[in-house]
Length: 375
Ligand code: B12
Image 1 (tube, protein in one colour):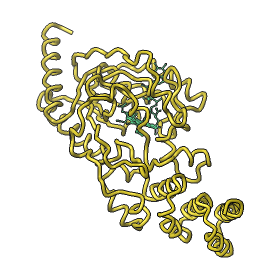
Image 2 (spheres, rainbow, N blue to C red; image 1 turned 180 degrees about the vertical axis):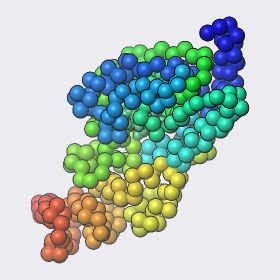
Image 3 (cartoon, rainbow, N blue to C red; image 1 turned 180 degrees about the horizontal axis):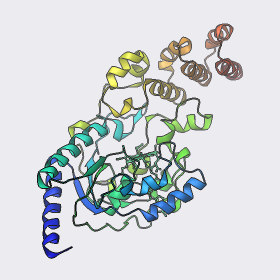
Image 4 (cartoon, rainbow, N blue to C red; image 1 turned 120 degrees about the horizontal axis):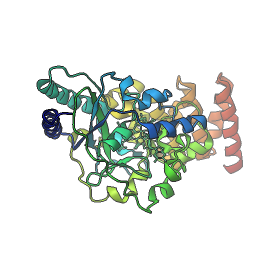
Protein backbone atom coordinates (compact mmCIF):
# COMPACT_ATOMS: atom_id res chain seq x y z
CA UNK A 1 0.00 0.00 0.00
CA UNK A 2 1.24 3.53 -0.74
CA UNK A 3 1.64 6.02 2.13
CA UNK A 4 -1.55 7.80 1.00
CA UNK A 5 -3.47 4.52 0.90
CA UNK A 6 -2.22 3.54 4.35
CA UNK A 7 -3.36 6.89 5.78
CA UNK A 8 -6.79 6.43 4.20
CA UNK A 9 -7.02 2.84 5.46
CA UNK A 10 -6.08 4.00 8.98
CA UNK A 11 -8.70 6.73 8.94
CA UNK A 12 -11.41 4.41 7.58
CA UNK A 13 -10.59 1.72 10.14
CA UNK A 14 -10.82 4.17 13.05
CA UNK A 15 -14.08 5.69 11.80
CA UNK A 16 -15.65 2.24 11.34
CA UNK A 17 -14.60 0.96 14.78
CA UNK A 18 -15.76 4.18 16.48
CA UNK A 19 -19.11 3.95 14.73
CA UNK A 20 -19.48 0.30 15.74
CA UNK A 21 -19.20 1.41 19.39
CA UNK A 22 -21.69 4.27 18.83
CA UNK A 23 -24.17 1.77 17.42
CA UNK A 24 -23.86 -0.27 20.61
CA UNK A 25 -21.38 -3.04 19.82
CA UNK A 26 -19.13 -3.59 22.82
CA UNK A 27 -16.12 -4.65 20.78
CA UNK A 28 -14.89 -4.17 17.23
CA UNK A 29 -11.76 -5.28 15.41
CA UNK A 30 -10.48 -5.81 11.89
CA UNK A 31 -8.61 -8.72 10.29
CA UNK A 32 -7.51 -10.01 6.92
CA UNK A 33 -9.77 -12.10 4.69
CA UNK A 34 -7.11 -14.72 3.96
CA UNK A 35 -8.19 -18.38 4.30
CA UNK A 36 -8.19 -19.84 7.82
CA UNK A 37 -5.51 -22.47 7.30
CA UNK A 38 -5.23 -23.65 10.92
CA UNK A 39 -8.98 -24.04 11.29
CA UNK A 40 -9.11 -25.84 7.93
CA UNK A 41 -6.69 -28.52 9.18
CA UNK A 42 -8.57 -28.86 12.49
CA UNK A 43 -11.92 -29.25 10.77
CA UNK A 44 -10.64 -31.79 8.22
CA UNK A 45 -9.35 -33.95 11.09
CA UNK A 46 -12.65 -33.62 12.92
CA UNK A 47 -14.71 -34.47 9.89
CA UNK A 48 -12.70 -37.69 9.49
CA UNK A 49 -13.72 -38.63 13.02
CA UNK A 50 -17.28 -37.44 12.37
CA UNK A 51 -16.83 -35.00 15.23
CA UNK A 52 -18.61 -32.03 13.72
CA UNK A 53 -21.90 -30.92 15.21
CA UNK A 54 -25.07 -31.37 13.17
CA UNK A 55 -25.28 -27.57 13.31
CA UNK A 56 -21.87 -27.20 11.64
CA UNK A 57 -21.87 -26.66 7.91
CA UNK A 58 -20.05 -29.64 6.39
CA UNK A 59 -18.39 -27.65 3.56
CA UNK A 60 -15.03 -27.01 5.19
CA UNK A 61 -13.58 -24.92 2.38
CA UNK A 62 -16.59 -22.60 2.54
CA UNK A 63 -16.27 -22.41 6.34
CA UNK A 64 -12.64 -21.34 6.12
CA UNK A 65 -12.44 -19.24 2.92
CA UNK A 66 -13.93 -15.71 3.13
CA UNK A 67 -13.36 -15.19 -0.61
CA UNK A 68 -15.89 -17.92 -1.35
CA UNK A 69 -18.43 -15.66 0.37
CA UNK A 70 -17.23 -12.45 -1.30
CA UNK A 71 -14.74 -12.83 -4.19
CA UNK A 72 -13.42 -9.26 -3.67
CA UNK A 73 -12.87 -9.85 0.09
CA UNK A 74 -9.84 -8.05 1.57
CA UNK A 75 -10.73 -7.36 5.17
CA UNK A 76 -13.25 -8.45 7.79
CA UNK A 77 -14.80 -6.18 10.40
CA UNK A 78 -15.55 -8.27 13.49
CA UNK A 79 -17.96 -7.13 16.21
CA UNK A 80 -19.15 -8.48 19.53
CA UNK A 81 -22.14 -7.76 21.77
CA UNK A 82 -22.25 -8.70 25.43
CA UNK A 83 -25.22 -10.73 26.67
CA UNK A 84 -23.95 -11.33 30.18
CA UNK A 85 -26.90 -11.14 32.56
CA UNK A 86 -27.62 -12.01 36.15
CA UNK A 87 -29.61 -15.07 35.16
CA UNK A 88 -32.25 -14.30 37.80
CA UNK A 89 -34.69 -16.49 35.94
CA UNK A 90 -32.80 -19.68 36.85
CA UNK A 91 -33.44 -21.84 39.89
CA UNK A 92 -33.20 -25.44 41.05
CA UNK A 93 -36.21 -26.38 38.90
CA UNK A 94 -35.28 -24.78 35.64
CA UNK A 95 -32.17 -23.62 33.80
CA UNK A 96 -32.23 -21.55 30.62
CA UNK A 97 -28.88 -20.70 29.10
CA UNK A 98 -28.00 -16.99 29.25
CA UNK A 99 -27.89 -16.60 25.50
CA UNK A 100 -31.51 -17.69 25.10
CA UNK A 101 -32.99 -15.70 28.00
CA UNK A 102 -33.79 -12.57 26.03
CA UNK A 103 -34.65 -11.64 22.47
CA UNK A 104 -33.26 -13.59 19.52
CA UNK A 105 -29.75 -12.20 19.10
CA UNK A 106 -29.80 -12.75 15.33
CA UNK A 107 -32.33 -9.95 15.01
CA UNK A 108 -30.42 -7.58 17.29
CA UNK A 109 -27.08 -8.28 15.63
CA UNK A 110 -28.57 -7.91 12.14
CA UNK A 111 -30.09 -4.54 12.99
CA UNK A 112 -26.79 -3.23 14.34
CA UNK A 113 -24.75 -4.72 11.49
CA UNK A 114 -27.09 -3.02 8.98
CA UNK A 115 -26.62 0.33 10.71
CA UNK A 116 -22.86 -0.11 10.48
CA UNK A 117 -23.10 -1.07 6.79
CA UNK A 118 -25.22 2.03 6.06
CA UNK A 119 -22.53 4.15 7.68
CA UNK A 120 -19.67 2.48 5.78
CA UNK A 121 -21.56 3.14 2.55
CA UNK A 122 -21.30 6.86 3.29
CA UNK A 123 -17.49 6.48 3.50
CA UNK A 124 -16.97 4.27 0.48
CA UNK A 125 -19.08 4.35 -2.65
CA UNK A 126 -17.85 1.02 -4.07
CA UNK A 127 -18.39 -1.05 -0.91
CA UNK A 128 -18.93 -4.77 -1.49
CA UNK A 129 -19.80 -6.77 1.57
CA UNK A 130 -21.35 -9.85 3.17
CA UNK A 131 -22.50 -9.72 6.79
CA UNK A 132 -23.20 -12.59 9.19
CA UNK A 133 -23.81 -13.37 12.80
CA UNK A 134 -24.22 -17.11 13.34
CA UNK A 135 -25.99 -17.19 10.00
CA UNK A 136 -23.07 -17.80 7.65
CA UNK A 137 -21.17 -20.93 6.73
CA UNK A 138 -18.06 -19.26 8.13
CA UNK A 139 -16.30 -19.49 11.49
CA UNK A 140 -17.36 -16.49 13.58
CA UNK A 141 -14.91 -17.46 16.34
CA UNK A 142 -11.91 -17.71 14.03
CA UNK A 143 -12.68 -14.25 12.64
CA UNK A 144 -13.09 -12.77 16.13
CA UNK A 145 -9.78 -14.31 17.18
CA UNK A 146 -7.97 -12.93 14.15
CA UNK A 147 -9.45 -9.48 14.64
CA UNK A 148 -8.27 -9.26 18.25
CA UNK A 149 -11.72 -9.54 19.88
CA UNK A 150 -10.42 -12.30 22.15
CA UNK A 151 -8.64 -15.63 22.27
CA UNK A 152 -10.18 -19.07 21.71
CA UNK A 153 -10.36 -20.45 25.24
CA UNK A 154 -10.16 -24.04 26.43
CA UNK A 155 -13.96 -23.93 26.52
CA UNK A 156 -13.83 -23.16 22.76
CA UNK A 157 -15.40 -19.75 23.30
CA UNK A 158 -13.91 -16.40 22.39
CA UNK A 159 -12.81 -14.82 25.66
CA UNK A 160 -12.25 -11.08 25.89
CA UNK A 161 -10.28 -9.83 28.92
CA UNK A 162 -12.86 -7.11 29.72
CA UNK A 163 -16.20 -8.69 28.73
CA UNK A 164 -15.44 -12.37 29.25
CA UNK A 165 -17.01 -14.92 26.89
CA UNK A 166 -20.72 -14.05 27.16
CA UNK A 167 -20.49 -12.20 23.85
CA UNK A 168 -22.23 -12.73 20.54
CA UNK A 169 -20.07 -12.47 17.46
CA UNK A 170 -20.71 -11.05 14.02
CA UNK A 171 -18.77 -9.86 11.01
CA UNK A 172 -18.81 -7.88 7.78
CA UNK A 173 -16.58 -9.27 5.06
CA UNK A 174 -15.62 -6.33 2.82
CA UNK A 175 -13.58 -5.33 -0.23
CA UNK A 176 -12.09 -2.39 1.73
CA UNK A 177 -8.40 -1.92 2.42
CA UNK A 178 -8.26 -1.57 6.19
CA UNK A 179 -5.67 -1.84 8.96
CA UNK A 180 -5.69 -5.14 10.85
CA UNK A 181 -5.76 -5.42 14.63
CA UNK A 182 -3.41 -7.54 16.72
CA UNK A 183 -4.53 -10.92 18.03
CA UNK A 184 -4.83 -11.41 21.78
CA UNK A 185 -2.66 -14.23 23.12
CA UNK A 186 -4.34 -17.18 24.77
CA UNK A 187 -4.46 -16.45 28.48
CA UNK A 188 -6.10 -19.61 29.85
CA UNK A 189 -2.81 -20.68 31.42
CA UNK A 190 -2.99 -23.90 33.43
CA UNK A 191 -6.67 -23.46 34.27
CA UNK A 192 -8.89 -26.42 33.27
CA UNK A 193 -12.07 -25.49 35.18
CA UNK A 194 -14.21 -25.57 32.00
CA UNK A 195 -12.92 -29.00 30.98
CA UNK A 196 -13.29 -30.38 34.53
CA UNK A 197 -16.87 -29.08 34.88
CA UNK A 198 -18.27 -29.93 31.45
CA UNK A 199 -21.36 -32.07 32.29
CA UNK A 200 -21.06 -34.43 29.30
CA UNK A 201 -17.25 -34.34 28.99
CA UNK A 202 -17.66 -32.70 25.58
CA UNK A 203 -14.68 -30.45 26.22
CA UNK A 204 -11.37 -32.21 26.01
CA UNK A 205 -7.72 -31.17 26.03
CA UNK A 206 -6.25 -29.14 23.13
CA UNK A 207 -9.62 -27.69 22.11
CA UNK A 208 -10.86 -31.12 21.13
CA UNK A 209 -14.65 -31.09 21.36
CA UNK A 210 -17.25 -33.86 21.12
CA UNK A 211 -20.47 -32.13 20.04
CA UNK A 212 -22.62 -35.19 20.70
CA UNK A 213 -21.68 -34.92 24.41
CA UNK A 214 -22.34 -31.18 24.68
CA UNK A 215 -25.40 -30.43 26.77
CA UNK A 216 -26.13 -27.40 24.61
CA UNK A 217 -26.40 -29.72 21.62
CA UNK A 218 -28.43 -32.33 23.50
CA UNK A 219 -31.13 -29.88 24.62
CA UNK A 220 -31.68 -29.06 20.92
CA UNK A 221 -31.53 -32.63 19.61
CA UNK A 222 -34.92 -33.64 18.28
CA UNK A 223 -36.64 -37.02 18.49
CA UNK A 224 -36.03 -39.76 21.04
CA UNK A 225 -32.72 -39.26 22.84
CA UNK A 226 -30.89 -41.90 24.88
CA UNK A 227 -31.53 -42.42 28.61
CA UNK A 228 -28.00 -41.15 29.29
CA UNK A 229 -28.73 -37.89 27.48
CA UNK A 230 -32.07 -37.50 29.29
CA UNK A 231 -30.24 -37.70 32.62
CA UNK A 232 -27.60 -35.23 31.41
CA UNK A 233 -30.32 -32.70 30.66
CA UNK A 234 -30.83 -32.40 34.45
CA UNK A 235 -32.85 -29.19 34.78
CA UNK A 236 -31.78 -27.59 31.51
CA UNK A 237 -34.60 -26.44 29.27
CA UNK A 238 -32.14 -25.02 26.78
CA UNK A 239 -28.39 -24.78 26.46
CA UNK A 240 -25.61 -25.04 28.98
CA UNK A 241 -23.38 -22.34 30.45
CA UNK A 242 -21.28 -24.50 32.77
CA UNK A 243 -18.03 -24.02 30.80
CA UNK A 244 -18.58 -20.27 30.86
CA UNK A 245 -19.94 -19.95 34.41
CA UNK A 246 -16.82 -21.49 35.93
CA UNK A 247 -14.42 -19.46 33.79
CA UNK A 248 -12.42 -16.96 35.89
CA UNK A 249 -12.63 -14.47 33.01
CA UNK A 250 -16.40 -14.30 33.48
CA UNK A 251 -16.11 -13.04 37.06
CA UNK A 252 -16.42 -9.26 37.56
CA UNK A 253 -17.52 -8.54 34.01
CA UNK A 254 -20.07 -5.85 33.12
CA UNK A 255 -23.62 -7.30 33.38
CA UNK A 256 -27.01 -6.42 31.84
CA UNK A 257 -25.61 -3.92 29.36
CA UNK A 258 -28.24 -4.50 26.68
CA UNK A 259 -31.93 -4.57 27.76
CA UNK A 260 -32.74 -6.79 24.74
CA UNK A 261 -31.06 -9.68 26.52
CA UNK A 262 -32.73 -9.27 29.92
CA UNK A 263 -34.34 -12.54 31.04
CA UNK A 264 -38.08 -13.14 30.67
CA UNK A 265 -39.21 -14.19 34.12
CA UNK A 266 -42.62 -15.45 32.95
CA UNK A 267 -41.31 -18.75 31.63
CA UNK A 268 -41.45 -21.75 33.95
CA UNK A 269 -42.17 -25.49 33.73
CA UNK A 270 -45.84 -24.96 34.48
CA UNK A 271 -46.41 -22.38 31.72
CA UNK A 272 -44.48 -24.37 29.14
CA UNK A 273 -46.64 -27.46 29.68
CA UNK A 274 -49.89 -25.64 30.43
CA UNK A 275 -49.97 -23.43 27.31
CA UNK A 276 -51.03 -25.04 24.06
CA UNK A 277 -48.61 -24.93 21.12
CA UNK A 278 -50.11 -21.75 19.68
CA UNK A 279 -50.06 -19.94 23.02
CA UNK A 280 -46.49 -21.03 23.77
CA UNK A 281 -45.40 -20.00 20.30
CA UNK A 282 -46.83 -16.53 20.92
CA UNK A 283 -45.12 -16.34 24.31
CA UNK A 284 -41.67 -17.11 22.89
CA UNK A 285 -42.09 -15.24 19.62
CA UNK A 286 -38.94 -13.20 18.82
CA UNK A 287 -36.88 -15.03 21.44
CA UNK A 288 -33.98 -17.37 20.81
CA UNK A 289 -36.02 -20.05 22.59
CA UNK A 290 -38.30 -20.28 19.56
CA UNK A 291 -35.58 -21.65 17.24
CA UNK A 292 -36.47 -25.33 17.42
CA UNK A 293 -40.23 -24.98 17.88
CA UNK A 294 -42.42 -25.60 20.92
CA UNK A 295 -42.38 -29.40 21.01
CA UNK A 296 -38.75 -29.63 22.05
CA UNK A 297 -39.33 -27.19 24.93
CA UNK A 298 -42.26 -29.28 26.13
CA UNK A 299 -40.16 -32.45 25.72
CA UNK A 300 -37.34 -30.94 27.78
CA UNK A 301 -39.79 -29.68 30.44
CA UNK A 302 -41.16 -33.23 30.81
CA UNK A 303 -37.62 -34.62 31.10
CA UNK A 304 -36.74 -32.05 33.79
CA UNK A 305 -39.83 -32.95 35.84
CA UNK A 306 -38.84 -36.64 35.66
CA UNK A 307 -35.17 -35.97 36.43
CA UNK A 308 -35.93 -33.71 39.38
CA UNK A 309 -38.84 -35.88 40.60
CA UNK A 310 -41.10 -32.84 40.68
CA UNK A 311 -44.29 -34.70 41.64
CA UNK A 312 -46.21 -31.45 42.03
CA UNK A 313 -46.16 -31.12 38.23
CA UNK A 314 -47.29 -34.69 37.51
CA UNK A 315 -50.71 -33.57 36.28
CA UNK A 316 -49.08 -31.38 33.66
CA UNK A 317 -47.34 -34.48 32.32
CA UNK A 318 -50.47 -36.65 32.36
CA UNK A 319 -52.05 -34.10 30.04
CA UNK A 320 -49.59 -35.21 27.33
CA UNK A 321 -50.55 -38.91 27.47
CA UNK A 322 -53.14 -38.20 24.78
CA UNK A 323 -51.27 -35.49 22.89
CA UNK A 324 -51.29 -35.61 19.08
CA UNK A 325 -47.51 -35.93 19.04
CA UNK A 326 -46.25 -39.52 19.56
CA UNK A 327 -42.95 -38.02 20.76
CA UNK A 328 -44.62 -36.12 23.58
CA UNK A 329 -46.80 -39.15 24.46
CA UNK A 330 -43.61 -41.23 24.56
CA UNK A 331 -41.85 -38.85 26.97
CA UNK A 332 -44.96 -38.43 29.14
CA UNK A 333 -45.14 -42.22 29.51
CA UNK A 334 -41.41 -42.43 30.27
CA UNK A 335 -41.72 -39.64 32.84
CA UNK A 336 -44.56 -41.38 34.66
CA UNK A 337 -42.36 -44.48 34.88
CA UNK A 338 -39.57 -42.36 36.34
CA UNK A 339 -41.92 -40.72 38.85
CA UNK A 340 -43.00 -44.22 39.84
CA UNK A 341 -46.44 -43.60 41.37
CA UNK A 342 -48.63 -46.69 41.99
CA UNK A 343 -51.87 -45.00 40.92
CA UNK A 344 -50.47 -44.31 37.43
CA UNK A 345 -50.37 -48.04 36.69
CA UNK A 346 -54.04 -48.19 35.77
CA UNK A 347 -53.79 -45.06 33.63
CA UNK A 348 -50.92 -46.59 31.65
CA UNK A 349 -52.70 -49.95 31.30
CA UNK A 350 -55.79 -48.20 29.88
CA UNK A 351 -53.54 -46.28 27.51
CA UNK A 352 -51.88 -49.47 26.27
CA UNK A 353 -55.20 -50.70 24.88
CA UNK A 354 -55.71 -47.56 22.80
CA UNK A 355 -52.14 -46.64 21.77
CA UNK A 356 -51.22 -47.25 18.12
CA UNK A 357 -47.57 -46.06 18.03
CA UNK A 358 -45.07 -48.92 18.48
CA UNK A 359 -42.44 -46.86 20.33
CA UNK A 360 -44.99 -45.44 22.72
CA UNK A 361 -46.41 -48.94 23.36
CA UNK A 362 -42.94 -50.28 24.15
CA UNK A 363 -42.35 -47.39 26.54
CA UNK A 364 -45.70 -48.00 28.30
CA UNK A 365 -44.60 -51.58 29.00
CA UNK A 366 -41.25 -50.35 30.30
CA UNK A 367 -42.89 -47.80 32.59
CA UNK A 368 -45.38 -50.39 33.86
CA UNK A 369 -42.43 -52.62 34.79
CA UNK A 370 -40.69 -49.74 36.58
CA UNK A 371 -43.83 -48.96 38.59
CA UNK A 372 -44.33 -52.65 39.48
CA UNK A 373 -40.79 -52.89 40.74
CA UNK A 374 -40.75 -49.67 42.74
CA UNK A 375 -44.39 -48.81 43.55
C1 B12 B 1 -22.49 -25.30 15.43
C2 B12 B 1 -22.43 -24.32 16.57
C3 B12 B 1 -22.59 -24.84 17.84
C4 B12 B 1 -22.62 -26.34 18.13
C5 B12 B 1 -21.18 -26.90 18.08
C6 B12 B 1 -20.13 -25.99 18.73
C7 B12 B 1 -18.69 -26.46 18.57
N1 B12 B 1 -17.87 -26.09 19.53
O1 B12 B 1 -18.35 -27.12 17.62
C8 B12 B 1 -23.29 -26.40 19.52
C9 B12 B 1 -24.81 -26.52 19.36
C10 B12 B 1 -22.81 -27.49 20.44
C11 B12 B 1 -22.97 -24.99 20.03
C12 B12 B 1 -22.91 -24.67 21.36
C13 B12 B 1 -22.62 -23.40 21.82
N2 B12 B 1 -22.54 -22.29 21.09
CO1 B12 B 1 -22.48 -22.28 19.17
N3 B12 B 1 -22.28 -22.11 17.34
C14 B12 B 1 -22.24 -22.95 16.35
C15 B12 B 1 -22.02 -22.24 15.00
C16 B12 B 1 -23.37 -22.09 14.29
C17 B12 B 1 -21.02 -22.92 14.07
C18 B12 B 1 -19.67 -23.20 14.75
C19 B12 B 1 -19.03 -24.45 14.25
O2 B12 B 1 -19.60 -25.43 13.97
N4 B12 B 1 -17.79 -24.42 14.18
C20 B12 B 1 -16.99 -25.64 13.92
C21 B12 B 1 -16.11 -25.78 15.11
C22 B12 B 1 -15.17 -26.93 15.11
O3 B12 B 1 -15.36 -24.59 15.11
P1 B12 B 1 -15.50 -23.51 16.24
O4 B12 B 1 -16.62 -23.82 17.15
O5 B12 B 1 -15.52 -22.17 15.60
O6 B12 B 1 -14.15 -23.83 16.98
C23 B12 B 1 -13.01 -23.05 16.83
C24 B12 B 1 -12.12 -23.29 18.02
O7 B12 B 1 -12.62 -24.24 18.88
C25 B12 B 1 -10.81 -23.63 17.39
N5 B12 B 1 -10.38 -24.98 17.51
C26 B12 B 1 -11.09 -26.07 17.30
N6 B12 B 1 -10.32 -27.13 17.43
C27 B12 B 1 -9.07 -26.68 17.73
C28 B12 B 1 -7.92 -27.36 17.96
C29 B12 B 1 -6.78 -26.63 18.25
C30 B12 B 1 -5.54 -27.40 18.47
C31 B12 B 1 -6.82 -25.22 18.32
C32 B12 B 1 -5.61 -24.44 18.67
C33 B12 B 1 -8.02 -24.54 18.09
C34 B12 B 1 -9.13 -25.29 17.79
O8 B12 B 1 -10.88 -23.45 16.01
C35 B12 B 1 -12.22 -23.50 15.60
C36 B12 B 1 -12.33 -22.57 14.43
O9 B12 B 1 -11.97 -21.28 14.81
C37 B12 B 1 -21.43 -20.87 15.49
C38 B12 B 1 -21.68 -19.70 14.54
C39 B12 B 1 -20.63 -19.65 13.45
N7 B12 B 1 -21.09 -19.52 12.24
O10 B12 B 1 -19.44 -19.72 13.71
C40 B12 B 1 -22.06 -20.70 16.89
C41 B12 B 1 -21.22 -20.07 18.01
C42 B12 B 1 -19.84 -20.67 17.96
N8 B12 B 1 -21.90 -20.51 19.21
C43 B12 B 1 -21.92 -19.64 20.12
C44 B12 B 1 -22.42 -19.87 21.43
C45 B12 B 1 -22.74 -18.65 22.28
C46 B12 B 1 -22.59 -21.19 21.89
C47 B12 B 1 -22.86 -21.64 23.34
C48 B12 B 1 -22.11 -20.83 24.41
C49 B12 B 1 -24.38 -21.60 23.59
C50 B12 B 1 -24.86 -22.21 24.91
N9 B12 B 1 -24.68 -21.54 26.01
O11 B12 B 1 -25.43 -23.26 24.93
C51 B12 B 1 -22.40 -23.12 23.28
C52 B12 B 1 -20.92 -23.27 23.61
C53 B12 B 1 -20.43 -24.70 23.49
C54 B12 B 1 -18.91 -24.76 23.37
N10 B12 B 1 -18.22 -24.82 24.50
O12 B12 B 1 -18.39 -24.69 22.25
C55 B12 B 1 -21.24 -18.34 19.70
C56 B12 B 1 -19.86 -18.27 20.38
C57 B12 B 1 -19.56 -16.93 21.00
C58 B12 B 1 -18.20 -16.95 21.65
N11 B12 B 1 -18.00 -16.03 22.59
O13 B12 B 1 -17.32 -17.72 21.32
C59 B12 B 1 -21.20 -18.49 18.15
C60 B12 B 1 -19.99 -17.87 17.50
C61 B12 B 1 -22.49 -17.81 17.61
C62 B12 B 1 -22.34 -16.30 17.53
N12 B12 B 1 -22.29 -15.73 16.34
O14 B12 B 1 -22.28 -15.62 18.52
N13 B12 B 1 -22.70 -24.15 19.02
